[in-house]
Length: 276
Image 1 (tube, helix red, strand yellow):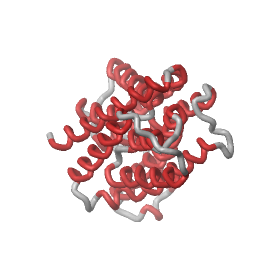
Image 2 (image 1 turned 30 degrees about the horizontal axis):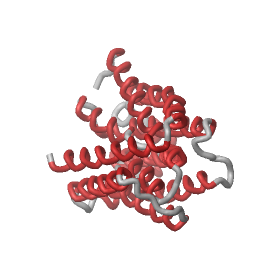
Image 3 (image 1 turned 180 degrees about the vertical axis):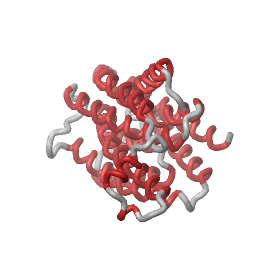
Image 4 (image 1 turned 90 degrees about the vertical axis):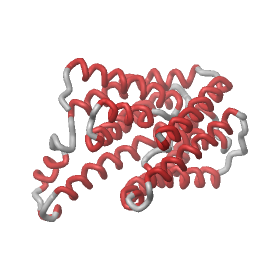
């Protein structure tokens, strides 16, 4: 799909809007942006890696500002960085194994499961039910989110953010930790996606390919549309400080209500897309 200047600016604005929601509330970038790009006519094999790598850059940038605005403490040995490590380590493993697992399970069951789970978490948030914090709950949350990621590729942000809050983590810290955790997971997903496509389309063994040919194949026009990636990446990076600052100034009670409504709507939307 050819990208004109007008379309480039539209894509920039879409990424700006979606990353603002994601960096300020801990969810929504891929959930909103991916289906919109497909509706616009972009090839899923081009759109998915573009969303992943732009979210990685936007999430990492937002995490820097979350730390500076004291929404979370990402210094070495802090509680927030330990939560990120637990969620990220499991999420990376799940991302690599995702394709193998998802190929053998009907998509409709996966999407329905994710939709129901997100909807339940949204209702719990709206009911303002929280529990005491424990590392066992964080490990369980990491396993649950990794399970979702490995089965369907989605449901990560809503589950991780709302799950932390329900498990007793402070709202702003939960948003910041999710934002940072998704950056390495999206990066690994992006690289795994492109490498997998190269392996799939090559007639000869990849190990026998010249390195220059391997990388040129990874970033060829058939797999990588740089105009789309650049538009999404710039939009997601530029808005990062505004999203983190919005998290800082928003009152916890209002933040809890907004998160509850957003998670509930995402659950309903996921179920609606599954059965329509």
